[in-house]
Length: 149
Image (tube, rainbow, N blue to C red):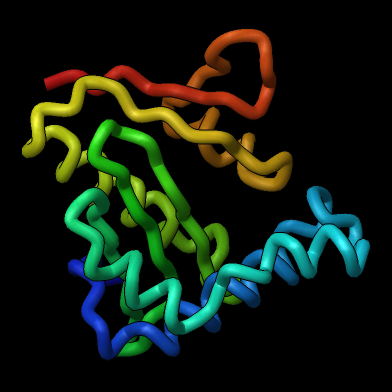
């Protein structure tokens, strides 16, 4: 069982590991192991940027912990956009992603946000679809979910 809590600055290094491993190992359908695509995607996944994201007043970032170790991270923007949601490969399909998403949805409701939206990877589309997200507009990558009170 995972614990979801607000991200702290001392989580920075663990978050960087989650982001980089998740993208590299779980998003192969998106980057196809193309060094250029993968490099561009990983370029901003640095400790400096993660610290900025944690401290941003325009975003709400949470981490998932299992047995005291950070194994997932997710972030919600001020207008309801899911900015990121990533897991370590070893916790995929264990409920950690669902718990992170539930944490973002709870925060959105607290803030009075009525709809969540995101641009999904090919790799994550099935996950979001299973949790009530539907295509928005013409692009298959744009998904949204109306929150019920």
